[in-house]
Length: 292
Image 1 (tube, rainbow, N blue to C red):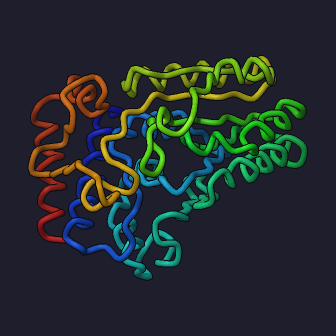
Image 2: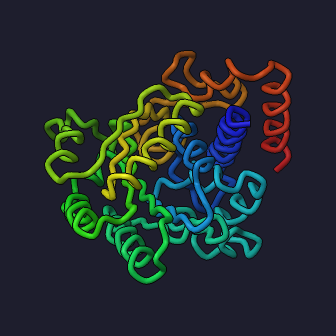
C-alpha cells in the first residue's frame, strides 16, 4: 500500500505538470518531484490530533494526505468553487483541516512560529501528546526563526518536529553557490534537541524510522529535527515551465520514473510492486491528463 501511494502521488504530480505545460492551470504550483517518499511516509505515521504545517512547496503533502480528492486540487489551481479550498487559496496556501493540515505559508520561515504556537497550545491548553510537524527546506532553515523556535520548544518540551527537506536547491542556486554548509546534527546537539537523518529514499524505511523517532521524542521530552536528503527533479517552480533557464523537461509519456537510481523514490517503490499495478496506475493518470 505504501509503495502504491508513492506511485499514485508521482502520477498526480505528472498530470499537474502536463497541465501547466499546456497552459491549462491558472495557478501553477511549486512541484515536488522526488519528495514522494517523504510525504507518503509522514501521512502513514500521522495520528488523529496531529498537525502538519506546510510551505509554498506543499503539493506532495497535500496530495499524499488526500489522494482520493485529486480533482479538487486541480479545481483549486483553476480557482474554481469546487476546489479543495473553494478556489480561494490558489496553490501556495492550500489547507486541509480534515486531514490535519491547518496552515500553509507562502512566507519564508513564517510557518515555524505558527507550528511552535500550535505545539505549545497542545501541551498546556489541550494537554495532549499529539505531534506538530513543520516542513521546511534547506533555504528557509537559514532564517533566525528556525533556531528560535527550537530553543522555545526545548524550553517547554513540546512535541514539535521540524522536517528539513534538503533538496540542495533554493530559487536558482544550490547550497554551495549561496552559503557554506550547515551541520544540522551539530545544531541539534547545541540546542539539546533530537536529530535524525534519512537518506534511503525508500518509503517503508522512512515510516519505520520516523515511528521510532517519535517514540524517542516522547521518551526524552524534547523536540526534534528530521533531515531528509531529497533529490528534487524539477527546479524552483516546475519542470517546464519553471525557472526560465530550467533545462529539465519532465514528460508523462516517458513513464512515472524520472531517474533510474535509488535517488528516485518511485524507482525504489516499483521494485516492491507487481508490473501490472504500475501499468494500471500509469494508464489511469495518463488518460486523465489527456481528457481533463
